[in-house]
Length: 301
Ligand SMILES: [Zn+2]
Image 1 (tube, rainbow, N blue to C red):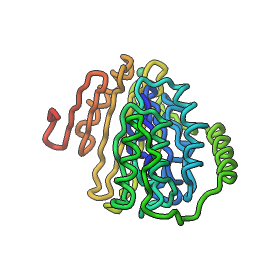
Image 2: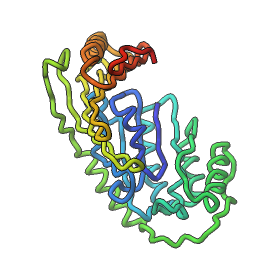
Image 3: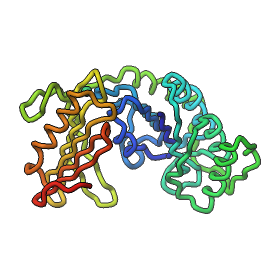
Image 4: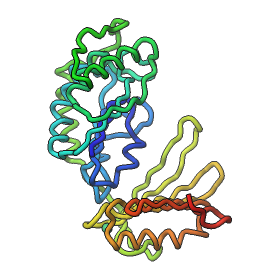
């Protein structure tokens, strides 16, 4: 399966869910995280140790418009999709790249969105962000729907003139070439651990702080992934909340888990109860979720 995120913000939540899953290709094109929330989505974020290169981030400069956006799709996103051969393509169809969007600074038009949709040929499109409620949404929606239906979207109108500074096409091509070189050269810098508290094998630790802009606090979080050649590997997340000082944990056994990773997950789940305030356990291969909270004990969830 492939998920292509064309929302102006980096798809940090979707990336997080599938970062260690080699069966899901996640591609996000978004306004550069140095200029827009959530501040993530750089080319060196390429997937976890058992799912390297199954995440592709393409940060774009503010002022990027139709021609450049379509160029990235045709010259980077579509070739990567063809290579991955997904059975299903899902489009996170955010509409805040529109040139009237009040939150972002991009220059995509309604018809430009029609062309994005036509190029992607997604099986499914899910509406995400879009904050120009009257100036853009009805027109962008219409163009997307027409393109999904294979109809002509060339008569969809724009309600305003494009006035924002524009990234020129020649400038953009140079920018993209450099970005592709950076992407090719980006290497993992995994910290590998073998500790008694981490069962069965080698684990990679990835610091993963998450800032919540609506609440104004940062979750201090570390992700541990069991290195495995036979499955996606067990994931263990340690999270410290600065709000109430609690330590919490998540253990996830992946889809089609190998027996060793499965056992490692159950061992961790057993060990962590009583040691953390909240422990969430997810066995994706058995479609099972359990939750433990101090001091009530195991609760089916
Ligand atoms: Zn495994």
